[in-house]
Length: 210
Ligand SMILES: CCCCCCCC/C=C\CCCCCCCC(=O)OC[C@H](COP(=O)(O)O[C@@H]1[C@H](O)[C@H](OP(=O)(O)O)[C@@H](O)[C@H](O)[C@H]1O)OC(=O)CCCCCCC/C=C\CCCCCCCC
Ligand SMILES: Nc1ccn([C@@H]2O[C@H](COP(=O)(O)O)[C@@H](O)[C@H]2O)c(=O)n1
Ligand SMILES: [Mg+2]
Ligand SMILES: [Mg+2]
Image (cartoon, rainbow, N blue to C red; front, side, top):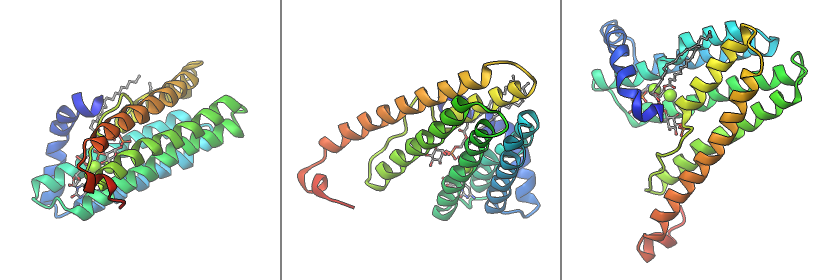
């Protein structure tokens, strides 16, 4: 949903920074890679130790690089297939670090099996959301729908982790439930969309197994 309603506004806010980086001769790929490293370091360095507030702050500082890299690529006319693949693939690493870090915290220091289990579920369901789309696109269809796309999952979990780190009770568990249910529904929404396209394909295309 945020992807649909907030993307243009966020990209506009990030454009001056993107322009500055392009002028400095920095490539979008470097921003993609450094952003992912920062997100992973913030998530794995802080979350497993229960430092949810500081983990969230570090991740938030780096996560917007995912908007900056694409803006840089478009500004400099360097959008590429390689860049698109790199961007999407590194997203998966960052997501895994965030949800994995929370799962480790729940299972160990946090002593909360629900947090551990729901974070693990959120990691797997979120990956499935992305995979369903990637596979559909690979087969020439689209699956760009859903109530809990990546930006929705990130905002939900990061706001909750930040608030939990400040001592607000229950908010993390509520957010994890929201991601678990929302991501599951998103897989269903995407599956329905893919199914409607697949059954409308002509015979030869429908039998094609790629
Ligand atoms: C007191 C509490 C302290 C807490 C303080 C910190 C709070 C931090 C809160 C939020 C910050 C989180 C921001 C998250 C921003 C996400 C940015 C982002 O990921 O943008 C990337 C995205 C680009 O998407 P792509 O198309 O490149 O990626 C695609 C995606 O990976 C697909 O995945 P799928 O959906 O399928 O699972 C892949 O399939 C696809 O291949 C891949 O290409 O850009 C956007 O989506 C643009 C929209 C970004 C909207 C961000 C809005 C953030 C707005 C406000 C933050 C609110 C902060 C409020 C704080 C309140 C605290 C109480
Ligand atoms: N290193 C990169 C990163 C991105 N791109 C291009 O931007 C598109 C993604 O845009 P976002 O605003 O979602 O980041 C991606 O599909 C590529 O076309 C790139 O070329 N190199
Ligand atoms: Mg990006
Ligand atoms: Mg990305």
